[in-house]
Image 1 (tube, rainbow, N blue to C red):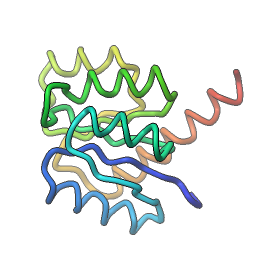
Image 2 (cartoon, one colour):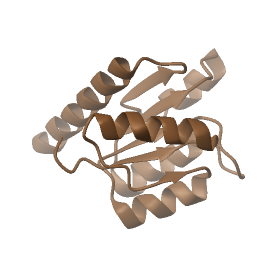
Image 3 (tube, one colour):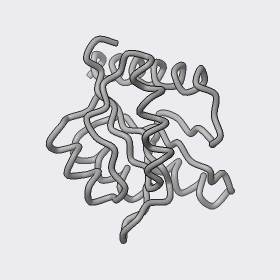
Length: 130
């Protein structure tokens, strides 16, 4: 977990700050909290996070699924969706981006932590196999 950086992409600042607080309590570093897809891509390029927590609904003209696809294609960073939306349409669209997790809000801190650890482990194993 040492120096594990997690980019938080969340359009509601209070929720973003709450997530950051939880992540820091687990020992992760949060280089930024951003509210739009364009900001997320820019920060992924600048900070090279180990993982991105992505809300499905974002401010601006890109939603979280479109943003996740671009980040995955360009930077090979694992994405975990952290969202209040769990309807079939959103879930089907999100699945196409090959996420490492999909957590529905409200969530338990332990669920968030275990999902992050599993995603980081899976991504590392996949890279080692390549």
